[in-house]
Image (tube, rainbow, N blue to C red; front, side):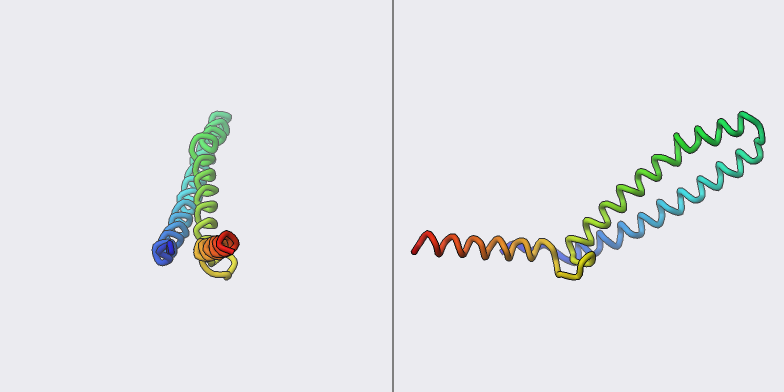
Length: 109
């Protein structure tokens, strides 16, 4: 029987949550920095800089946050934290072994 290391998945899920918080904190700091800078440059150039800053720096950080969320959700599903039904792959392997047993019995009878 194949068994996955549940503690390794939990460690990875916890690490993803910490990474998400760091990414969110970075986004807030950069957003505040750009807001302060463009407010100080209260000119049309400051407004253009604000738009470019968001496109160039903040959008990719937001996209990275979406990737981190997806990875964290996937890990939580695998270890059963998302639905409290147990470890996803353990159930999958158990179902596969049950199907294999049924097919073997059908072939031998």
